[in-house]
Structures are given as C-alpha cells and as structure tokens.
Length: 600
Image (cartoon, rainbow, N blue to C red; front, side, top):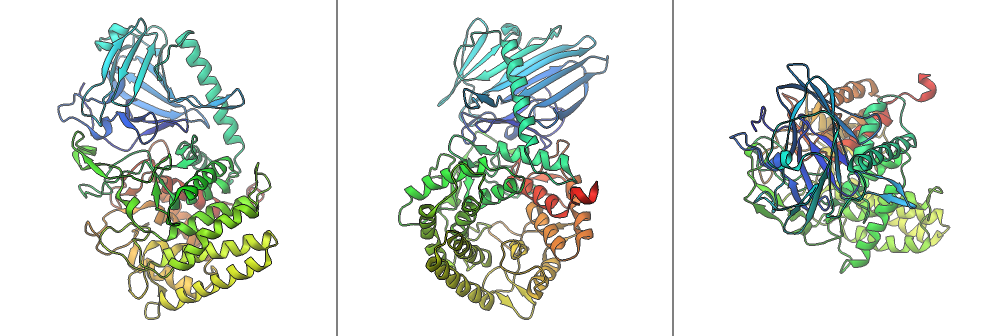
C-alpha cells in the first residue's frame, strides 16, 4: 500500500472513556492502544510511517481508484464518518465508533472499535488491510482463525476481529466488490452470538443516542457552539471512567516542533492539567467527570507516602512511570525518539497541592452532586494545604517541567496561595470559623510574600520566578486564579511585559528563554487562549475575539487541536488531541461570547 502523503495531525478521534483510536484523513486507524489509553499501540502507524509506503500498524479500508476523501462527525456525537470517492464515480461510507451507552443501570464502554463500511454509489472495489502490531511496533501478533473471526494475541493483550466480510479477502488483502454493508468489530477475545451487522447497528444507534443526550445537557455559550461541543466531547473522551483519571493527550512522542527532540508521553494524568479540564467541563455544567476524578484523587491521596504528591500519575494511580525509549518505532515522520513513560513523575512541582484543592472546591458548593463534599473531606484537603504553606517559597521544576534546573516559580507559589485561599472559603461555607480564619491568614502571608519577591519594579511586571527578570505565559492566570483583580495595575503591567517578550503575531510562546533543548520554536496553544482571556477581562475584548477566531481557524478539519502550532505555516505539532488546547477553546468561548439574551 502506497502512502499518498506524510503523516499529519489531521486526525479524527473516536473513543468511549476506556479506549480510543485516531483515524487519518483516508479513514485509516493509525493510533490505538489496548486495553486502555496507556497500553500497547495495536495500531501505531502514526509513529511508524514506512518510506516504502508499505504501511504497518494500521487498519485501512481502501477504495480502488480513490481520488478524494471527506470526513465529518455525525452531529453532536463521537461517531466519525469517512467518505471515499473514486475517479469512476464509486463512493463508500465508513463509520467508526467505540460503543458507549447506558445498559443495566451503568455505562457500557467495552474496549472495542466498530467499523461499518457501506456502498453509496457506483461500482466500489475495496481492499481491507488489517495490520496490527505488538510491543510498540516490534512485530506482528500471533494470528488464529475462526469461522468468522481472527484472534490476535499480543504480549499482554488479545483482540478478536469479528466480521461478516470474507476472512480470506481480509487476511490476504484481496480486492472485493462492495455490494452490501460490511461490519468489523475489534474487541475482547469473546464470541459474538448474534449477527455482527445487527449488533453493530444497535450499538451505533445506542451510542449516537448517548452522545446526543450528553451534548443536550451542556450549558454552552451562544457563539461558537460547534467548536465548544466538539472540544467538550473530546475532553470527555480523554477521561478514563474506570478510575476517574484524565489523560493529557492520547499520543506519545509527537514532537513539539520539527526535529526538536521534545517528544514526550502524555497518556497519563497530570493533576494540574486535570484541574483545568474539570474547570472547563464544570463551566459547561458537566459534573460526573469531576466526581470520578475526585474519587481518583482520593485514592492517590490515600496512598502517598510522606504527604508528597507527584505531578503526574498513571491512569490507574500508578506512581512509577519510568521513562524509556523504544527503538522499534522511528517516530512521527521519522522524528524520534519515541518515549514510553514520563520522567516528570520524579519531579517536584509544588503547584500540584493547590491544584488538588482547586479541583475539589466546587464539590463543597454544588448541590447537584450525588455526594457533596463535607467536613471530613475538608480536613483531608487541609493536608494538601499544609504542604502549600511549607512549599510556596521553595524551588521546584515548575509547570513547564524543566529538567535541568529548579527555581521558585511564581505560578507554583500562586497555586499554593490559591490552595490556602480556597480552603478559607470552604471552611467559611462549612461554618468552621476558626479554620477559615487560619487559612485566610496563611493565604494573606503567602500573597504578601509573592508580591514582594516576584515583582519586578523596572519591568512593572511579575516574573516567572522570584528574583529573576524573565516572564512566562502562566502569569496570565493571575486574575483567573483570583490572585489579582482584572483592573489591578500590576496585572495590566504583567500583560504588557508578556506581550513584549512572548507575543508573536497572534500567538504566544510559553517562554522565550533557553531550556534543556534550546529555545522554543512553536506557539503553545493554551498560552494563546490564556492571553485571549486576559484581553477579555481587561477591556480588550474585540482584540481577544480576533485572536480567538484565528485560533479556531488553526484547528484541523475536524475541529481539534494539538499542543503546539507553527506560527508561520499554522501546522499542528505536539501530542494530540491536547486537553489543554481544548480547554482553551471552551474557556475563551465562554468568556467572549455574547449572552443568549444579547444575541436573540
């Protein structure tokens, strides 16, 4: 099979909060891990493109003579439709989804991919290429054949493909005329007792109904509804419902910039990132993801030793995410290394204690929750609060996870302040006056220290770390976190300093200085959205709208973003889909949109 174009991040995303798959513009599954987000990539073609064009690690249905393709999601769902067209007028339709719906009083979300291939027009000749790999692309799995299924055995997984297509045609990759719909179900190694086609159709209808109902429950802004809905669905897909963990992205080792070596594994749960994800979903009225994540956090807090939290954990709460390089995959467009695991689990990032408290704060005030948090939960959070007091003025690796240095990072300090501040508010709400007074006093002390130590009089700005002149984009959150009022001259001065140092046209760098890998080359998408929000609250809403519209135009054809983008070409780089970037779409849309009353 000849690849007509190099790999790109113009990828569709399907999933069900247990597994997910990335599908390229030609309808090929190119990245899917089993039996969960951080598992072995059964389809790893995204990181394995072969210059010879003989792609492995993919699941493709090809239309002979195909000249173009068109993709879209079924409205308000996570069901992806790919239409392929040939020069002679043939057309086929491919539907891909992961089943998710209510069954027997709970969410049914098996580790399963479903593909339905339908003839639409003309004389369609297709060829199916089922080429899973195991051990991070090292070798094919062992295949065993049944009457209408193939079993693939990997090192730590087994997968069964059940189909009503000709097994001979599929396994030998022979061309066949598509006269009627064909169904492929990839899932657990379990027999399917009923008709594969009817089962897939039932799952399709139930899954569509689930997503349409879920979207209907969202409290979305009037403007940019489509963008917000797509971002919200994709954020939901990044939650691992079994434990409540929320991953930062579905991929590993997509470089932040061409040939940069900044290749990381993001298939884990960063406590900071998860807080921002929950904040965005909470803003749309979604609460179940928060409840699940709070259970995840409670289990982590119960297992930590010495009250020391890591910045990142496995989606099952695992602590040891030992980083290694796999040589069996050459990487995205051959730009390795491909990393599995993440060294950040060894770092100290003190903002994590504030992030735990901020993530839990709404649960004390929101009466919609099944079990609102109580005094007992508050006292558990106080342990994290004490760490905020102890660590707010200590060096750490910071939110950008510098590997070669530590400093007293202002963002970490402000997050520690935010933790103490929220504890004071929660205590007051619970009627715990003594504890409210204690935490308010501690928050005031931290606030005063930060203002004295992180303020640069010459620049008229806060700085990214105490006593040093550089700024970084996290300072744009000083208002959002409640540290400064929007009209505070110090916040306005900080925005001006960031504009001078980090703004590049309509984009923002996260920082401009040298790090372990040189100087950053591409814009960091969430930072641009932080800038948009800062403009909106400081009276520059029209300018913020222009930059926001430009960012929406940088999304791929299916409305999604990765972590970074090239400021010249607009090409997406970095892991995908990036929860931070999707959070940015939602938060900026909520901030900028006209109200329903104004618009109607």
